[in-house]
Structure formats: structure tokens, C-alpha cells
Length: 329
Image (tube, rainbow, N blue to C red; front, side):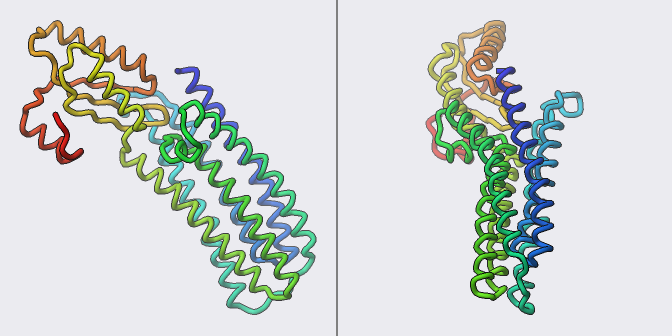
């Protein structure tokens, strides 16, 4: 699994680096075209690409810092750094992209009419940007499809439960970029056809809404991971079934707590009612064996804690019932 994780991290880095280079080139082109054409939508798209460039830089920081090994101050490692920097990336998309797009849109719609110049330059830049964004988007799609196939999920299910915010950020960011380019093209074209700059402003406002939605989606994902989200439900069900059905020393799984502490890194705490006939030495050996078997079967497990408890303890039962409902313990 170590090699798989390394390969996955390397692929994420390639995806982010490709997106960074593409967005930087596109931002420069859009800014120049925006100045030449006087298009609010084009300037909003330039701000969009600038925001995306900052986002990729933050994601690279996330990838580098989250790979540091555990130490005395952080015994569970630095995996959650990826969630923190990815949250900042979502904020960057909103502040640098959406806010500027809203400003340009309102200024154009409610301000004085603006004359359009050299729209052909805008069309050419948008076409080139669409091709370049398509390259970056294709890389993100390939990674998402490969990882979703490995986990036996649909693409959308994978994006919903994935604990790797970097690939999800690039995928949503590039998808929003392609839609934003189409909106800018529409605003530029309608401005040319009607002679009214209002359409340009409307396109800019639509781009702002698009970026705000993308930023909220990504921020919500990373907020849940930072707070301490449960591990993949498939892993939770698998560990519960293994402990309940395949470990002879365990009579009942009383409680099972999991938390994602990084990408492909899970903390597991299992409260188990063991066979009362086991001696202290037997219990110790059983815990060591179960720990090893769990890690072998579920490679994402980073730390495993096994706690022997009686299933009839009233305080423990009340805590479990408060969290999960009426379970048969």
C-alpha cells in the first residue's frame, strides 16, 4: 500500500502542477484580452484564472506539508494539513475570483454603457484557453476515474466520499473554468450582436455565481475533514464485519470509532467485548494479532486502538445510543 500511496500522491502532484502552469498562462492571456476588448466577462475570467493559480500553489503546499512524518508534537502526523491548505484554496477561489467577478458584473450592468473593441481577440483567447483548460481537466478526470474504479464507485460517489481534497479541487476548479469560458464567450458574443454591454455584465455575474458555488462546495468538504469526518463507510462496515464475524475471541463489537487523519490515513478505535474466559496474556496476544490482521486487510488504517469493555456497561451504552441510535449491543 505504501507504493500505492506514493503513486497516488505523485499523480496528485502532477495534476496540480499541470493545472498551475495552465492557469498561469491563461490568466496572462485573459488579462491582456480583457484590456484590449474592454469586456467585463473577460476580466472576470482573468481574475478566475488568477484565483486558480493561487489555488494550485496552495494545493502544492498542502501536498508537501501533509507528507511530513509524525513526531512528538503531532503523534498522528500532519495529514490534516492537506485539508487546511485546501480550505484556504477554496477561500482564494471566492475572494480572488467570485468577488471580483461580482464587482465587474455589477459595475457593467448598472454603470455607464461600455463600447466593445476587438472582440475577435477575445474569441481567440477564449478558444486557446478552452483547449489548455481541457488538457488540465482531462488529467484530473483520468485520475478521478482511475481512483473511482479502484474503489468500485461511480465518479460522483468517489468525489463525495474521497478524503483527498487536492484532486477534487482541481477537478471542480477546471470544470468551473470550462463553464466560465463558455459564459464569457456568450457574454462577448451577445455584446457584439446587440451592442449592449449589459450582456457582458450578466455573464460576469454568472461567472461570480459559478465560482461562489465551487468555493462553497470545496470549503464544505474540507470543513468536514478538518472537524473530524468518519472514514469511508466501506472501511467502517468492513472492519465491523471482520471483528464481529472473523475474530473468535470477540463476542460483540460494542463501539467502532473512525476518523480520517489524512488522505488514505484512518484512526480506528474499537471497543470490544472479549470472551470472559481469556486470561490477561491471551487478551494481549489477541489484541496484537487483531491489530496486525486489521492493518493487513485494511491498509488505510494508520493507528488502531482496541479497548476491552463489557457490553452491559450502562454509561457506555448510553454514549453509543446517543451517537448511533437504538443498536443491538
